[in-house]
Length: 137
Length: 426
Image (cartoon, each protein chain N blue to C red):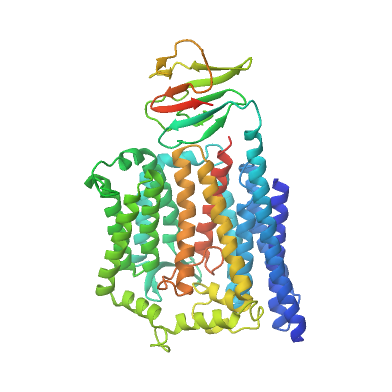
């Protein structure tokens, strides 16, 4: 085999390795982009977790009803020994954000008051589930 | 990105393995032959099969894991085939078996998911310990001064198969730790007393750290395996930090590694030999320093684009097909090739930690993080050893080195990650 030909093959092989990785990296970027896109749009209301063992600082956009609780089936899984499996639900009704308690053991609190029937909340209100505190924004 | 794109990427990576094989054949004077076909077939069955299993049993899984793994395996296989075609033939079988085992794991978890693993945590812990100690029994054999292997004779024949049970034990350890820490992370993270910025743990909180330390020191003494010992301790400390976000554990862990390292250096000549080969490879060039020195020569002669696959002399490096595969890559594919390998690993770990961050409960988060840590610590330890940033630890480079047990364990690891990523959105 002539050395020039082998050299060329070597470079082509290296170039292919880079092309492959470039393609993967680009798709990862696109993948993250599509995963994030639906979060930015919507009504604008979102739930910000203020105090929590694991979720502090996370935001959940309120595009549909969100159930919070300890169960893996909840939309916001709080790791909190004082929370029930399916503790409370925050939903949109005619453009208003409503908080429902789902029969939790330790109760759901809005601005420190226990929720007994569905309560309307607005921006800046604090919702407490167990020891987890959230803010509507 | 869709599953179709994933399949396409796996096929392209398989093509790279085939092309690499062709390149080796060209330089050795044979060209396109059956070896190429068999290699492509093995990659298709092993990695393609795992891709199909993911489609079937974890359809929402992250689509980048398997293509990246296939890519790394393709580079490793090319170099292995160039170094030793007969070992490459064994490795092809390992790829097929590993793909099958990983697919079986996905199948077993198809309905209940990884959450089911929480139930068996003490079974896992005891099994992991047992597997680690198994080579110390008469079934074990000593290879290159470390007692890590089991040699089993296939009944009725004289064929023997070697297996490293410690590879599987790593996965069980992660499953145990994730489940244990998911329950205890709160009590382990509450610390009151402090010295300056450093919070002091209560004695009970240091229990897991000390236990891990004693175990890893035991591995170092009885199996004479520096790498496994550091990996074990590193995973425990890193997972404790991930679960509690208390830097204290990193500080104490680091102090223990340093202290333990100094004691081990004083006590054991196998540790001393490795450290002196690391610091002064040319003082004992024909003896202990030979491997490190040959590795450095390989990096040097590789230059920017390498000698070309099949043209260099990576066969001069001891253990080039296993621990030192990265030096062989650096010699024949140059800086360009070694950087692409690093980038491949970096992307794989980034994808893995991304899965951990997006998972929705503590157990899955810790499980994913632990699995990536096992891969990451191994990769960093052996790469740092080969590049002479650290003493050589004798760990295989995941997915690239020759070795069936390690490939099977790492493929199962990737299957578990895929499953966790599938569950992040259900």
